[in-house]
Length: 181
Image (tube, rainbow, N blue to C red; front, side, top):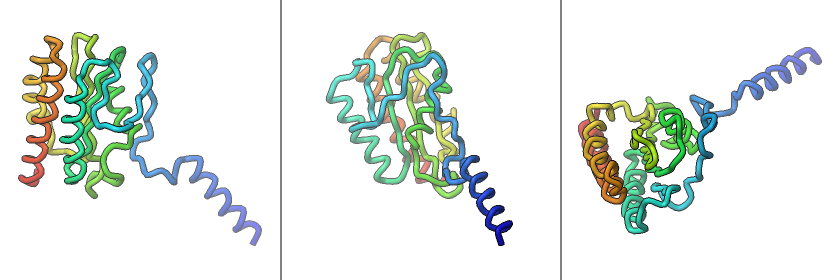
């Protein structure tokens, strides 16, 4: 009896040590070395850590992103931040850190998160990280959004660039959802 109890305790300890109780498919949620810390989501899906956006752009963009979440299309975060040196890793880890998208496997409707990272002080200003639960949202879909938005971002019109990005993302994600992609 003691042997069974000891085996059970060892198995539970092993499961806890391996993260057996976590529902994240990928536990890499750390800030890439040398990059700025992840800001919390707080009150808006649009985060302006660089001070580049007007209050009205943040409010309008947040309302669109909130509707995407309420309609169970996706959880979209747009973040404007300086100092990110590893944009692909930073955006991906940030989405994981936030726990974007409904929990669960992508085959069960989970991981429907999307991060748009805008870096005002970088030559390559725009990066996207798409969650595994949005397999229909591919480069064919988001490349035109990037091309249209970058025209404004490159000329420091962040309000117009961000609104273009959000409005077009909303349109494309809803089209994909209605087509069953």
